[in-house]
Length: 327
Figure 1: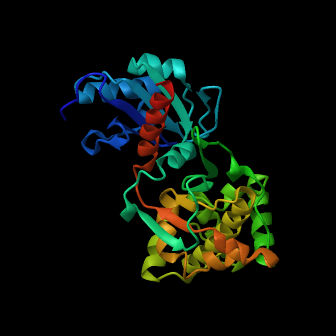
Figure 2 (figure 1 turned 120 degrees about the vertical axis):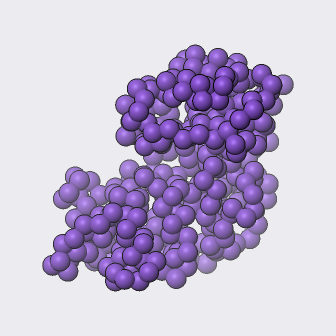
Figure 3 (figure 1 turned 120 degrees about the horizontal axis):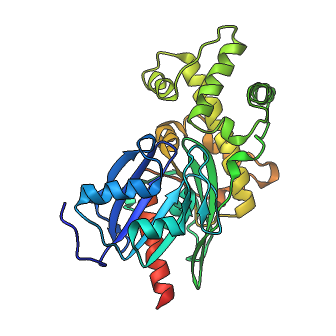
């Protein structure tokens, strides 16, 4: 690839538990031909990944850098849930030699991407009235883990606050869900939302149904989804139905807490995989099943973000906001 002129671009990265993707951005636009993916297991830390990207790119001189991290961020330092890396501003500044650096939780980055994604990459699931320019939004991530982040567009800029929603208690609506909670709790000590609403969570639901049926079998999430697509395994269908209904319940709960009149956005690999099934498996009914507030739930539109580079775009957008705040 041909690098832009020095200090005319920013470096952005999306650090997951397994892979790190790095790219260059001009303003809010991620340069698609600069995106590279690295296996985290091959590197001792973030700085070495960035050095490898620099070598692969033929040199780097970004003005600013922002990384999105799959884990909590506090006081400019990130703690990875499934990765033993030190990720802080000093390390990022040293590795990139950038004037400005920022570290975001990955859901925060997704929130900063809203409004800057191609319309064809935003798939409507539930319709609702359009909110005003300052209406709150909510990003819900369903992938390797589960999390959510509210998005507030204020007169002074966008604020996306972090959370660790995936580690809250799993809600219970039915006798079957109670047994599922007990199954998860027996295996892992605590029935958290993430223990069901994630890739490995889908695997647990499938295993739970096997135990219930007296026919215990384990299966990987991608194989469950493949069996769901071709209809060869009724258990895969049932697991997906349970998953969808619980996702609707949790998304509805979070919506009542945050009141996202600007819309709810599901992101992440598992959310994208479930997008074709959400309507038929009852996501909307579970989302709006809130007793006397059932009608009120119609105020919240729900969409699925199908852009795999959304976290990179959000990181780029956040750097633009920081630059505007400095001027």
